[in-house]
Length: 260
Length: 249
Image 1 (cartoon, rainbow over the protein chains, first blue to last red):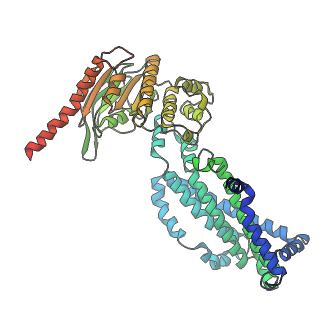
Image 2 (cartoon, one colour):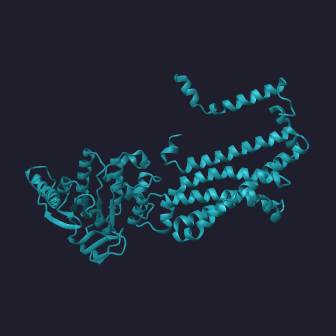
Image 3 (cartoon, helix red, strand yellow):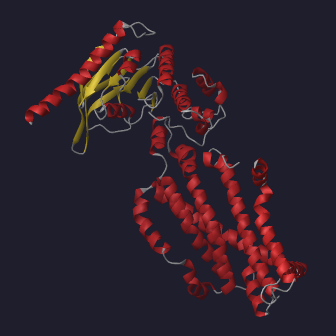
């Protein structure tokens, strides 16, 4: 019993299920249960990846997609963050802006794709616009709520101890809102990849989504699967980075220090 | 380091139509330890919050060191019922709040005074309730206040920790000689610590008594005499109103 518990605590355990899945997938392809037209084996996907690495297009596409994702995230995140802080700190600003923001938020941003193509064509702007729009709202909502839910007792304490303006912001307000902001960041990272995939699949001439669409036209199943796996990998990677931020910035928080 | 006098002049406070404080007059000399006793909702905490500048009074004037207050006073510190430590700062950083210096020696000294030398780099979440309140006391005293307000700071602690904290507060008060105002509903805590006890009932001061006992105080006959006197004041009143209600029925 004890040995099972220590085994589960080892970090490789999280990879047991994916590895079993991959092996099963490979075997069912090798023994002919799955035809290569329906689903190529992992090995065929690796071969396809090798081909694209050799001609240089894979790295190029990954780089382009990642760059788009993070620039869009940065723009949208910054807008959401600033609006969240303004409306969280000032009732006047909230009265003026919150209703409008909530109205825009209820529009599914991917429904704007036809409009965005008409405005920006299939250039970089259209992708950045969609990613930024998708990312801004979760960050806005969580920043706003984070500020509004700061313990009023701590703000009162800050007042008695003479904390004002900048000092109050950096010592009390920002760290108090940070757990909520990071929840928003984590959620927004998911929205970021989703927006980018859709935008690249529909309106693009480069990037991972474009790679998948053009592979479909030539019936290159291995490349289609490769694109999907790449998105899974990049999504997991950005989630991992967000987790690192949480561990680093929220180490005071009992919920995060316990998991260590 | 000496305390500063506080003068409360015809102060009234209402929340909408509810009159919480009805004309309070009170004056404290420098270094005096005053305890304010009363039932829940009698207005005693509101009075403290007015002095701290956390609420606006509806009428009257409060003078700290002969000057009418406008917001929070820089020589004033306050301890709350909950410790209100910033959970994202270590113990020592919490004590440094309001010190305006990166220098840690003052904060370290303050933590030594409350007996927490081994907790400098811990997070508040890892401390017990009593230890947190000690950190809050160290934080209040690190700024060398001339007026310390205590809003039922020991109310949430267990009986033994409370006695220890009472001794600690008395000890530090007699060393640093700041003026202190303690709001509490614990009569024996008031008699243990204060030079003078007032009772607030329904927004008015109805009782004002010097406690002439030598320090450190023991729970002897004289102590019990004062305790009983204050309790009688608090309980008789409520009995009388109780009868009045019965008569009207």
